Length: 262
Image 1 (tube, one colour):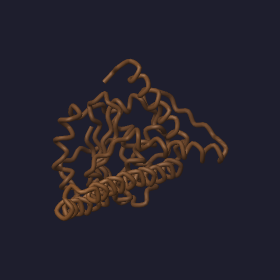
Image 2 (tube, rainbow, N blue to C red; image 1 turned 90 degrees about the vertical axis):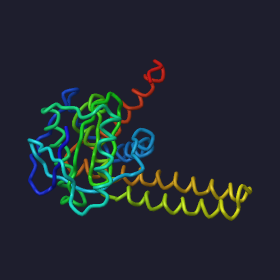
Image 3 (cartoon, rainbow, N blue to C red; image 1 turned 180 degrees about the vertical axis):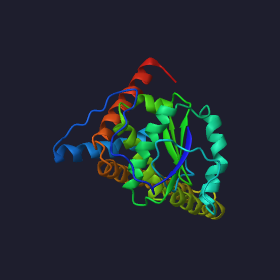
């Protein structure tokens, strides 16, 4: 599935359920929600991979996704993502086609876009034909989810939690921010190497630069978590779905580790 949407249309509030599970909406006290939200934030950066050349853009709910070949005009970030799109497809086994699943994903993204900070953005969503559990975003509003992740999610609320996290990266423009920081660190590294060579001072400076990038990545993940949890609640999804999915993800990772799967 490869579809593009914008946030100009109204979306039905009825939730479409994933064929791999049942919807379980449970109300919890505020204190437990805050604890669970913290748990989600703590694990998100360990479970989700976001390529370094990440994010930006928008969406429109549709019960019948429309495939498109072009990205937003005059968008440098979108053009960068367009160039990476074929490589992403080749890496993850191409696109996965399932009309029913595509409509469900479109409705989920539609509901999230309506409540997003920028509902005029557009998103291009692709379901990747890979059993690996993964989701990530690229510049220009390119969102990717694998069929493996869809199989692991128990309901559309859990899927919404994953997608909302990636949309959070887009909304916060994390891709461009990281690209700029990496360019700054790259320049600083070259200057340090040229001036100080392999001295202990140079090595310490390089380590500080790497730690700065790592902290920046953690901060981005936490910000995307916050945006995502807020979005799924406002869109009418169960906010505890994020915690449930992370628990499933943890169990899945443990199983693969014990079984020796690669």
